[in-house]
Image (cartoon, rainbow, N blue to C red; front, side):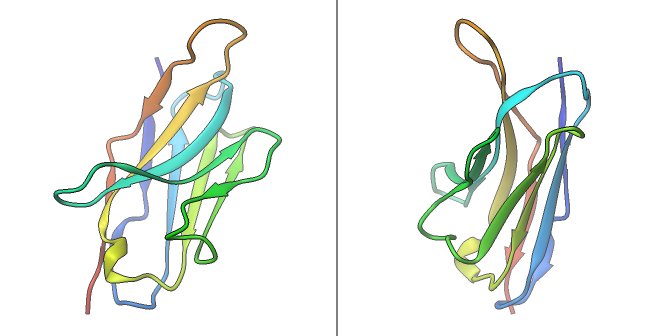
Length: 120
């Protein structure tokens, strides 16, 4: 088993920035894709950004141009730099990672979540 531990959430004013980090508990695991999702109160969880191994990052339209995802595959860490934050970005942010497997369904791991609140 592997655990994903997020950090970096908090309270920020509109227009501000935050950087989220997520680290996997075991470096021996290899992940094909790492990413971030978020869930606002009363809404479904949505994918924010993902970065497949060796491929370009993908972003939700709502954050494109403001958020940047990056990963360190050797350290099994993934980061989300969030700039120009808006009140509608307020949500619990979850790190996720898809285990690299040769055959069959790939297990997906989730972190516990970190709260991001954008408010003046």
